[in-house]
Length: 72
Image (tube, rainbow, N blue to C red; front, side, top):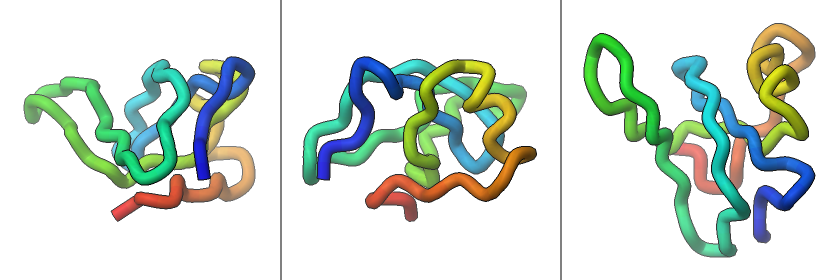
């Protein structure tokens, strides 16, 4: 399953970082590229892509987003 497309390029990790990233080919794993006070996040606990930054930022508040296939 390929995840992300030109319409869904915004992702959110379980730590709440929101970032833009292109499609992820089947069999590959996306890691959060964001940094915070603890340093590089790097988690692969990532939700399926959202259509906009605003939707990604609201993702944990509105409904329950689906995990990307590799989340773990």
